[in-house]
Image 1: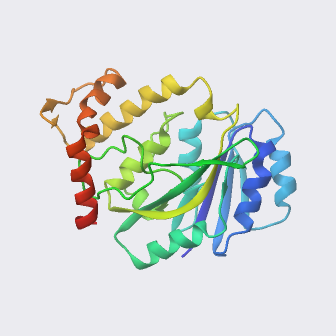
Image 2 (image 1 turned 180 degrees about the horizontal axis):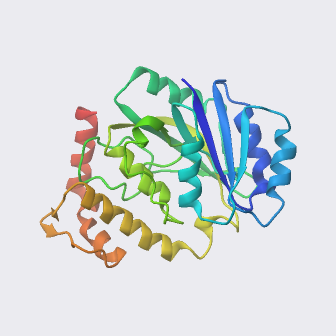
Length: 276
């Protein structure tokens, strides 16, 4: 089973060495790495090419113009030739057995379309700071699951052939494209949690989630959830009507407040324990 490591780069060349070392150090050896640069304005491509050298397992592409992460990630999946795909940001890294642990699940369980694991939040030098506390198995086949609050997160891997059966990533998204992918894959089969830390997530001043895009991210995440509601044919949620037109994120997140209740959380645990 071939694995495609997908790297969407924009001005993160200075961090790429850690990403590169983590890929070539994988215990699973049937992989390819595809890097697509979104017209970086730094010396990313020079750094990346010097690190990779003549290693044929890597393929490097450059977009003709800056198009945004939705376009770049969509193109990366199209360029992939592996059975399983997994995104690794160029400023992050994966642990040596990350790919092996994911492939093992896909090989044993044909119903699993996506795997995810724990990740470690790190400082700008990729030194561990704190683990992602919300990581756990979610209930499958639940039309009211919207990954809110976030549970499915790094290291996410998915079946490429199943992805191609979805509407695919919304290329207009420059933020929340990952949530769009997760929900579309969730609708196609089972998702499986790997209870290991497989991903090192670097926080630094230039990161998308650390800059002033948080408000825009909130709005786009709300739109992604609303789109999922429409795909699933939902008209109401917890007795409240789902708007026929997307207006703002707060209106959507207000519909999901019931999921924070004590009884709902107990119900989720029971579903996970007995039906997964």
